[in-house]
Figure 1 (cartoon, helix red, strand yellow):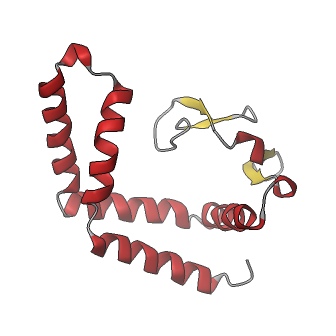
Figure 2 (cartoon, rainbow, N blue to C red):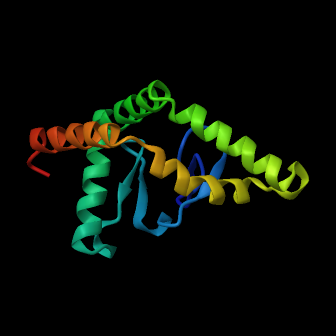
Figure 3 (cartoon, rainbow, N blue to C red):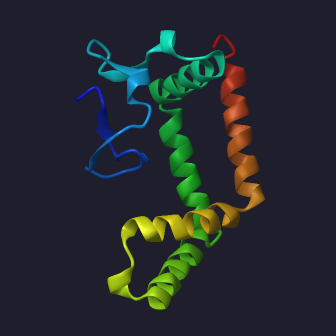
Length: 138
C-alpha cells in the first residue's frame, strides 16, 4: 500500500475506495506485520497515546468488534432508519440535482451524531475502558 493511502478514504469506513489520510504523515507501513504503525517521533504525548491505543485495538481485533457492536446497536435503536429518512428529506428539500455527497454528509453528520443514544455511547465507552484496563501496559 501507498504510505499515504488506505482503504475507506480519509473518513475511514468500509469499501474499496482509496483515500489520503489527513494524518498520513504520522504513520508508516510495517512490512513484516502487514499493518500501519504510528510514526511516534513526530507526535505529541496525547497523539502518541491515541496512536498506541488505536494500534493495540487494531492488532487485537477489538476495533472491528467495537465497530460491529456500534453498527448493531445503531440499527437496533432505529438510528439508521432515522438518518436515512433525514437524507431523503434533505434531498427532497434541495432537489436531487442540487445535492452532492459532500453536501449530504455535511448536512447529516451533526444530526447523526446527536441522534446516537447516550446508552450506546456509554456501552462503547465502557467496552473501551475495559479493554484499556486489560491492556494497562500501554
